[in-house]
Length: 85
Image 1 (cartoon, rainbow, N blue to C red):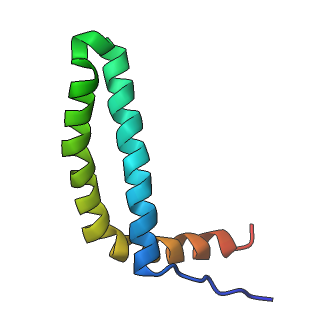
Image 2 (image 1 turned 90 degrees about the vertical axis):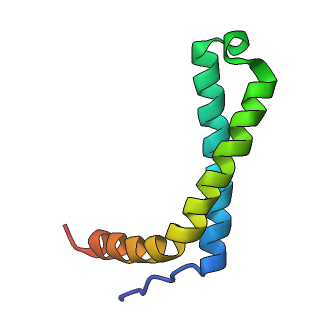
């Protein structure tokens, strides 16, 4: 029995992308600052500044590219994984 892939709506793609971008930005900023030394990196004020710049940039990528990229990538991956070994 063949199944067809259900593609997510653009709203879903954007919402999930923004949540993922936020979590990635927080992890990246925190990891970068911890590896360089929290106090030497500027502490919470620098962390907030980096988040205020980095997250909107990531959201711009999500809003402009994800609605086109994710459905196509999903179709290709589903087709690839559906092939018998």
